[in-house]
Image (cartoon, rainbow, N blue to C red):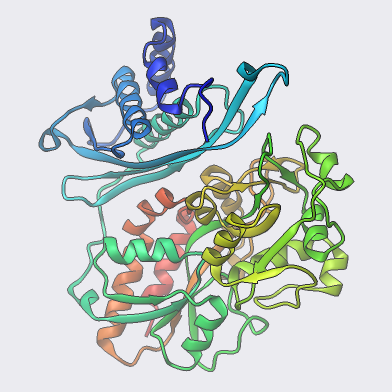
Length: 487
């Protein structure tokens, strides 16, 4: 994956540690200037940075974060956890995505492109979550990817400290949460739900069978609650019991692709995506794709289209987006958890789509952001209503979620597809837990209510480490009121 003529990400980071002192002085000055504008209300004054992994890249990335935190003067970095107010935990991965040849006559002109991520969690001394974030490469990165990830990580952490968004745990789980529960549904949110259940030691059995099957199992009384990425309406499901719909988190559905040797990241308009999935655009070097990717070396190859075969909330989000983009798609194909696909090969679940794209050259698919990252797949920037090509990340998904605050008259059945704003990612979505409004078993009712309270408070501090955006505060507050109204 890496040529001898270019230093590895770890070597690049180590060389940067020896950069001229003037850069460090400028970096320190910028941080100190920002700090004078806002008084930190947090009680965190010292921090321990745990290991990010044993490989050289993870070691260099951790050291760079320690150096930047030390230069900032905001936090004292200590080696002993017992002497720290909090601990910063991290996991990272960096991989090569292709090689660009600047001069075909010289091997020395080869330049390797990298992609990667840094997942961070800040916890208190008892291990309770305080803050988290998934750092992905900047949109206009000029530094090495290691430096870029480290700089953005420190920037986000210090900004959270200054804005007083880091708070102590305020919703301890009650003893009733030890009651075993059974749930089924969404694969889009599966990684987060499993993380939550493990983190909070919740005895919940979760079957990731897709949103449609989860709703069906809830209707049949086979599970205690369901998870869905489509709002429950008469058009999406018919459930013979009263249901309370609780939003839990916001995710982004991204177009993933496998194009060996591609020299740059791709951009898609909504119309291009609709054309590919309808079969109107069949080759990677078609004029429509080339028009918005002029610098890309696109192959003269047929596009292998991958889609979901199971009843999927992710498919509901994807096809709803395509329906908004293309009147022809809306009238001829439509949207839903299940549709009659005009083209392509099917796979089950987000995991199945990601795995199939990963092993199929010249393919395209759609998955929740975290699946693209974990499978080390490229994912494209998508044009939003403001005409901006936006790549999904925490900032762009959070920007899309802000429009939900203006939708109070619609309860929790809102859509944030094509949300307004230049920085909003256009294929963003809430995901929901569907809870029976009337729960006859008082122990299960107490357990479910306690679980939801934790998810809507402490759990929100953990979701960003997996690339899911926390709920806007107004939405979370309204959701808590809905939980209190369960009978």
